[in-house]
Length: 183
Image (cartoon, rainbow, N blue to C red; front, side, top):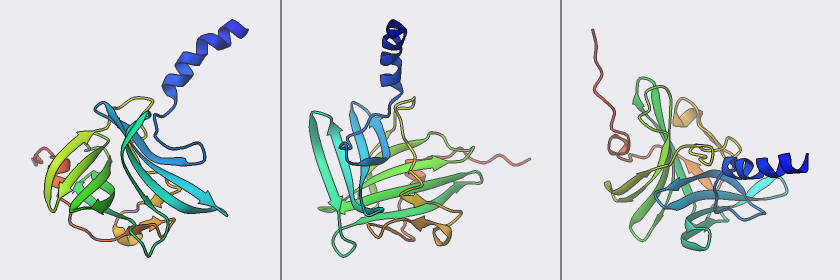
């Protein structure tokens, strides 16, 4: 029995989501992008999300970190935009030094891929890396953080650290959709 359990350990480790979140944090989005990992982590206090932290890098070397702990200080922004008849792009990002670091997820049957990380300067996409799929990918936003609806008006953030609104990010560059073919 013990040897059977030991044989399962490597498979269970492969199924665990890859994250840069600390032990006292919950991952709300996390995936491998290229050789690095991007994670959006939440720390709770009294049943509420008290801190929201973005980390990018490797477990032994975080290259970029941004935290929001007060809705009056720098915080995260979020929006949802239709991309095709059966695809919606959900986005959460922060701005720093003239750049936007944007985690995104596509939901629906017309999505060319699940999620990713983009870096923008204004409306110009400097990079856009897809999440690597598989059991270690959490390339969607946890409902404990935000419930995206059919529009921004019907979306709800569960923390003031993430403010939902109408923002015009260049989703057509993040998710190029094939042209529709009508009979």
